[in-house]
Length: 468
Ligand SMILES: Nc1nc2c(ncn2[C@@H]2O[C@H](COP(=O)(O)OP(=O)(O)OP(=O)(O)O)[C@@H](O)[C@H]2O)c(=O)[nH]1
Image 1 (cartoon, rainbow, N blue to C red):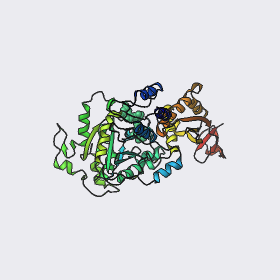
Image 2: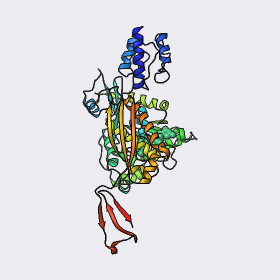
Image 3: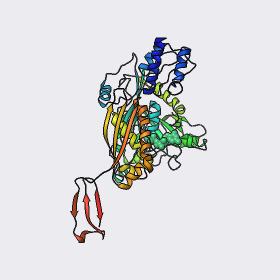
Image 4: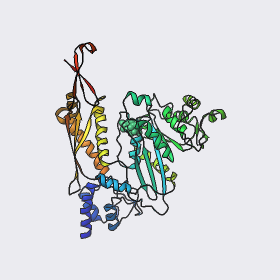
């Protein structure tokens, strides 16, 4: 009995640190279940199921390792947690992989137009939110990876920024990584997942030209098509029509049901799927031919899902697991992502800023982490200062009666608790960024284009006009 009570104590403590832990409890002693229910553990964090019997020892071991237990008692897939300390995360990334006897591995690049849902899908596949998601485009600014380790298989997911063009990067002053990273990830991949937002009627009828270019540059890498956001599609029969267009009527060498067989000439115009070499550029003729294409006829499979819904994503997860080939793991099984914990946190804050602040305002906010520490009882304490450029932006970010900044802190804390699997106390403050070290330039009267402007204030990155 003492043992059972100690276990309950441990469970209750763990339930705070592992709020989404999933454990099968049926047939654990009735008293243990009563205590767990009374403590509010079951129903809040743990899911009781009638499927299995788990001995006290196994349950305790599983919980201490932060793992779920499957019905047969074997350790199953429970996503790892992100270490809150950047040094621990760094050592974990360098740690020798704990290879099973016959390891399998698959590197998957997820590509698509901005806002297709790549980060949402990656988070869903990982089982934890470690990538920022927002309805504004280019939420993801550089490639990062997520790792799923399930039994003897490791899937490495390469989340890439939405594909864009050099002219857009220049026009919107975006990072060059947005151009380079997706192609780099693609060249490393064993499988490419192309995501399309089917709810966007302006773009869903053809593959994004940048996506087509990537596929044509690496035609030998197997690719699958994921039609995302089907929950937003009222007329589901449209999915067949879209599949036909986006695959040119051919999937895995077979004709999509009810479509005319493409002519030999039509298929021959596409770069061959088995072509072994990865090219770095396409010829003018190839680019011209691609411009006329709507889809890619070399997809191996097509999935239709809603990335926000776990159930729809499960078949894709299973497909990735069975597609893995024998080969060594690249990371220790406790690795969840290669991002450092502070970056995960600032990305989550950026996600909320993008979500709640209007137009260009969130893009002008910078963040500074003032405090990052783990307390003795394992809680993570974080203080972040947001620097805004204008008083009006400050008012917007604080919100009426401090409502918005409180909401930001609460929502980001929830996401961080999920990623780090521990309690998080986050404080966000907002300050106006002064133009420190600004230089006042007096301009000759004749050179002024604006009648009331007499001087420009310069800081290293921006030119501000002072109206007098
Ligand atoms: N309704 C619905 N919304 C979705 C789905 N998947 C993603 N979204 C939403 O679509 C928006 C964009 O999702 P992201 O995952 O950030 O898209 P992304 O492709 O990573 O975007 P970039 O970082 O700009 O390349 C967010 O508001 C998501 O909540 C889905 O299946 N259904």
